[in-house]
Image (tube, rainbow, N blue to C red):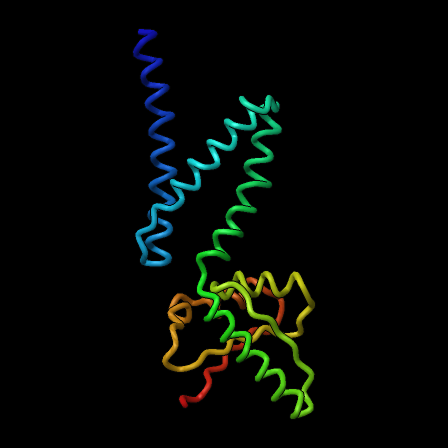
Length: 173
């Protein structure tokens, strides 16, 4: 009976780990339509770093976990994001933003903005942390990839933020 309980417990542990990994794959695929198993490689790297800190460096378990989960993993995530993103798209967005702010200044309108995350809600969250806004405006250009409009991002922003939220679709051309 003890052997049965031991195998059941180990099976539940392994099953839980597989369920978490599968959830990550499903979440990544349903949000991006890209089958990506990269989180497994990053998880393995974090497990190795944890082992290295605990066993080789002799750190207490709690300190090794805190370092891996709250310091090293976020730092590596930021680095991987920067390394794998298309910088030309970010540079183009920055040029468009600069042109828009310049045109508004010529018209006597004080405005400022910043480029941010590909996810519009995350970009708004990041922007609102940096400066207080009077309004949130989503601007789209016809013919560009704006599938987030179909996902109700503007409505979600209206529910999330206590500020006026508007959407402007630029004319084609």
